[in-house]
Image (cartoon, rainbow, N blue to C red; front, top):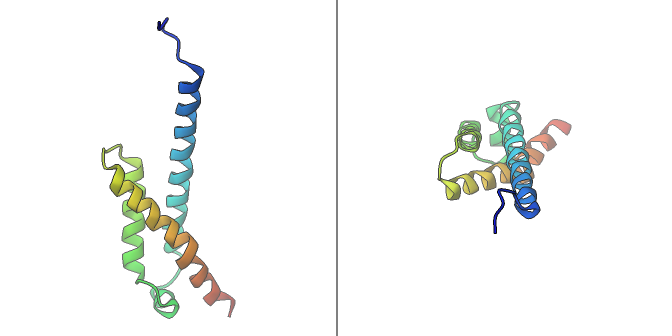
Length: 99
């Protein structure tokens, strides 16, 4: 019987989802902003996709995270794009600066 109270489990689930949403939003914004810091030549020298492609992909990722559309599979794909940028492309670009 529901007395109008939210169960503690549902409350925890809500806050976990909110936390995940904001962590992913911050990661995507960081990846997008970081992609703007490097020159197009750096992307070519690192052997990665060009700067325009990464910037567009990461910009779309941020927009899809902010707009509440029922495109969860596309949003998931854009999350993977941001994580690939942060795990693979960003270290390769940063390595070029240290030389």
